[in-house]
Each structure stands twice: as C-alpha cells, then as structure tokens.
Image (cartoon, rainbow, N blue to C red):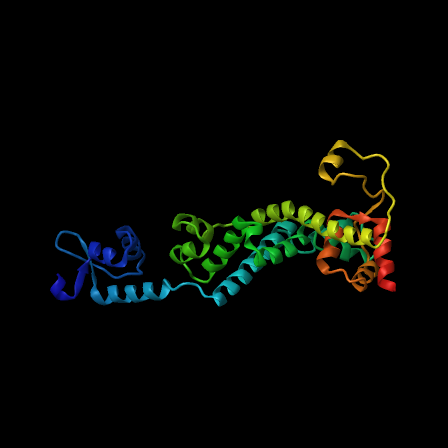
Length: 283
C-alpha cells in the first residue's frame, strides 16, 4: 500500500506523535479521509499526513509576549461575563430593579443607580488582577488558570501551555478546558484584599504618626478576635469605610494613590486620620 501513496494509520500516528485513537476519532467525524485495507485496517494518503505535520508544526510554536497580553485580556473578559451572570442569576438585567419598584422599595429614579451598581465584594477583583499580572507569585494558581484559559481561547494546546506555565501537560489540559473560573478568582481576591489593604494602611498610618498626628483610640478592645486579627495596641475608636465623592477628591489632592483609597474602603480608617488626610490636601 505504501507504493500507492498511502500510509497505515499506526505509522501515521507515530509520525504525528499522537495516539492512534485520535486519528480514528477524526476519521469517524469526517475531519480526516481514510481508506480501508484488505483486512479492515485504516490507511490515509501521504498528502494528508504532510498537511497534518505542517499544521502541527505551526500549532506548536511558543506563545509570544503579544499572545500572552491578548490571552490575559480574553481571560479578564470571560471573568467579567461570568461574574455578571452570577450577579443577575440568569435573569434580565433590570429584573431586580423592577421587582423592588413593584414592592415599593424604590420611590425615586436616583435610587436605581445604587441598586444597579457593582457589589462591593466584586470591586476588589480589579486591583487583585492588576497586582497579579505584575507579580504572579501573589497567587500562582489563579495566574496559571487565567493565562491557561486565555491561551486556550487563542488556539494553543496543552503542549504549548505546559512549558509556559511550568506544569505538566495533564494539568495544562485541565486549565485550558476548565468551564468556570469566576469562583476561584473571587475566593483568591477576597482572601488577598484585606491583607493587602492592611499593609497599605499601616504605611499610611506611619506617615501620619511621623507628622505628629494623634487619633482617638479605643480604651477597651472590641473582642478577643479583634486583638488577634489587628496589630497590637489600641485601635481607632471610630472607623470610616464609605467615602463620598468629595472625600475621594480630597484624598487625591493629599497625594493618596487609587490603591490607598481602595484600601480605606476595604478595611476602614479612623475618622480622625481621615480628617488629617483631608486637611493636608487643603494646604
């Protein structure tokens, strides 16, 4: 049969470095044309084998930096779509607003914005992804998941993804074909956000203390859990977490970065400390 320009399926699988069943699946699905031999064995044309070898050579190229950037964008878009579906629970976009309007909970159009805005817990995902992209060691598992999903959407297989992420081909196959990624990313961000915010506020509080600022402290710790979770020493008596637009603008005039302002909304800051920061911005 080799003189007629055909090759046995087993030999073709060896040349392609794949399992023979993979080629049989392609034959049954009509993606690969084959011929039956005298004893029922499959044969394919050498031209078909050469095309498959060329396709594998093109497909096994290593992802470039441009591919990695595009893969990260695609994974973020998919994450946003999954979080939106989880939020509305497969309902129309304004179903919750219409329900509250019928129940009389909304009486003015200005309240619609408060109902339709993104939940506070989802807002921590954006800074988490920004830090994760710059430093993958923040959460290596989530970084591999997002990058594997993005590379898979670009057509890269497990053979190309595995060396890029430093995992086995089996693990890379799981990352590429994972159906849902929002839960893993949300859990990692929720665990990371308070610790990151605490470190940022500790640096900001040290600057205030160096300037001679003194804030009202609690005389009695709130609970044993509070003493274990917080740093040693008394804590501010009045904590502020919600900031209005004027306060955000005042903090920016004081020289605070967006990440520091975000940290205040996550763990809160003493009201006296907030006033000192706002006063510093008016000087």
